[in-house]
Length: 300
Ligand code: KPL
Image (cartoon, rainbow, N blue to C red; front, side, top):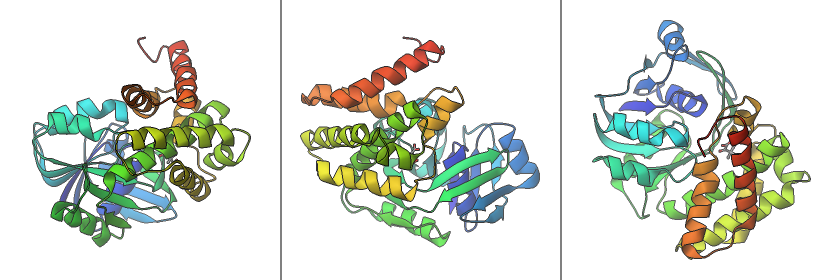
């Protein structure tokens, strides 16, 4: 299968690199990473070891492939969608944080699949990515239900040795992932602790309450996710990635813009529309927004 991976950050490089073991993969990213991958290939180290040679480019416009995976930071989704709209793909599948798929649907004619990925990844240096946790990828229709296209995409992951399922319950899974992100990312970033400490340490009550709030927002929108299931998922991911730092913790530690809007902004927006109180997520959002504002990383 021909696969374009739009966003060669940590997760994109890991998934793209693993896919390159069985498929024809093009990574779209930035220099110096792209240059290094072109010259020396991509090295995967850690829980999975591989040296692969995917194609690597800095311009993702006007290309075609069977599948485009979107793995950019959530705030780069519109730019990714604009680039992908100039190409041709049988399916476009997001593996990002936040509920970004709706934005892709608006901009693209290709079928958009929802995806969740629980593999842990860390970009060590240009051309080298560490697999910090073997997880699973789920793909399926945004609205839920069976899909031959999702089956085909899951099989392609499987052929490359990546744990994957075609899931008929993506509405629930997307909110479950949002609950996990809301529970781990803000508390771990503010306390500068690992995922395990964010949930099992003193901030654990905040983490659990944020996850419960997302479940209430999900249920108010018709998704089948209970507060207890959201907390179970939070605790499971925290256990499986206990020693890792969340992406938001990394962003704050390195002074970069965070995904506060696609995680907490999305929760707040849907909570307000559905009349669900989300005081914990609101507080986490306002503190992280204030941190970004103080560093000139946001306009308002
Ligand atoms: O997706 C993640 C992130 O770091 O953004 C979690 C689930 C918290 C895993 O680290």
